[in-house]
Length: 323
Image (cartoon, rainbow, N blue to C red; front, side, top):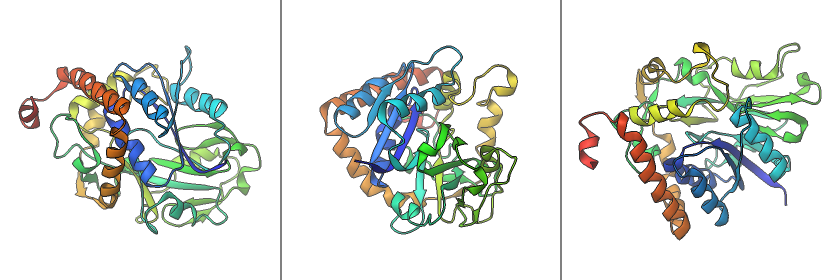
């Protein structure tokens, strides 16, 4: 049976966040979620296996060869193993990215129903700061981080896409599919502000998508909430983990610096449009944790992740409440 809406992701050491992320996107109506993991030290692989055994996702433990880009390798491996091309719409999101649809009932199907002649739906990020948290603690992250960067912040120019009929493209990358097998100028793009456009000739499609202007109403149809920093200790674990989409070869390819953390923490505005999903997400999380193997693997991820955070914890605040 062909899936209507497939979501794929590459993950490494995302253990405490996985159940919430899967639950959220099941609630939004994705009928297939596939995850490739690699080199996890926090138990993420075991949790993903448990979720797959229970039927919530499909999981591929991927071995990344020297010189490979982990996310790209994972997407290609899932494409071959799971028949990803047999879907009507394909989305690619990281474990810190949550789709947030503003049309209809807020389901992914409400968004793709607007596509019309569009082959790609291009959505901008809305990035969230670390406020009011001090240190990492167990539990869902979405309700805990209500403060977003102002809509015009340059970080919100980042984009992700939903692509119709992905088999027409040579490769899957984390922001968009690349290598369209036809004439790229024949593709039709629907942006988050409702604008429809065709790519220019002679400029790679991914460059046009990544460099699209951030319109004042760029999030009108939908956005993806990006919890890129969360807390200082968890951010440092992300820095340790390395990048999934780019090989880190020198100072120019190091992304998760102290300056990155500061930049993603202001100025901010309160933005809680995603809260309307929370009752359904909480119920879905409860169903998932009712599976003993999932609950046990989740608890182990939380334990290991907390220990990994310990060297980076800030003194005071929430740290003292949960110590």
